[in-house]
Amino acid sequence: GRCVRVQLRQNGANVEAKGIDSYGQSGVQLGSDATTWTTQTGFRDGGYVISNLKFTRSGPYSVTLTGTKTWQGGTQVEGVRLAILSSIMPDRSTVKVTNGGILQLSAENVYDHYPRNTYDLAQGTQLWIDAFDAINCGDKVVADAAAVKVISDHRAYLNDLTLKNGATLSGHTVRVGNTGPAVWRTSGDLPIAISVSVETVRYSTDAMTFDIGVETALDGQIWEFASREGMPLVKAGGAQLTFGKKVVSTGNLTLNGGTLAVNDNLTAAGLVLADDSTLAIAAGKTAQFSNSSALAWTTGKILTLVGAFDEADQTLRVGTAVAGLSRSQLKAIRIGSMKALLDAEGWVHRRWPGTVISFR
Image (cartoon, rainbow, N blue to C red; front, side, top):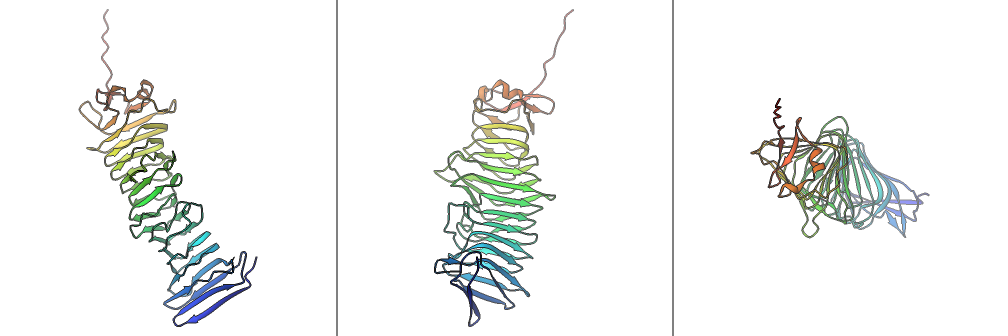
């Protein structure tokens, strides 16, 4: 494909860009040394689309896009602050932010329920989420040593998130789920810090999965959207995930590898063990689950508990009676070198070995 014509027009302090009779994988590069300028969009014209937009700079400046049109294809934000306003949004685009660039999404993405955009953030760049559904249910965000900032409390959805090499997610509450599962992945050589709260919105039986490949701390609460409760939570991956604040879920919690550290109270439905895992509960805090005896645990896998589990301690509760876990599930639990038992109220304790007396 090609772009037949691109019209650039000076309008006072603004520059207007408009595609004319354009189609296919076209391209236009917009750059300026001005302090600020505004592009009134015309990236669609006559049903055709200009794609592969590139915003560059040779000096520090910012770009603001306004209007009602969209564009498709690749988008590069290179060393510039690009603010997208109104309802102009990339559509089915891979948006790459490089060279210290900042992408500010201040418009609602009208394509709510479909995979649309991938936001690829290079080292030292930022993504600012500043509108309801600015990131929608089908979008992907990949941040490599970059910062994702939720700068307004509009509860944008963040269902497909990858944080690598010390990348951060911070700011206001985000939602997950609604139209399908959610997966947050972490990896790399540096710890990951997440300081947002998470509101789950259940869709069918789809889960919210934390796939943790490097030490990750979530310093925010997890709760449920009213009338859409019950989204399952899954801790996967071999590294430690720390829940720093209160977690409330009426879905099951599945432990599928690595360590889940609970530094505040946690409440969920059933407890499921899918792979060798550690559950560490901070002093004075509790993790409480519903009766889980009918839930399938993977045979041969071990759940290691870390915390206070002596007879007087109330740290982990499964159900409200001694039948909260099956016999085979209890055999899969280790507290140090000891096995576990449930008391009459469902609290888990060490099972101290008995004394054997031999008579001769």
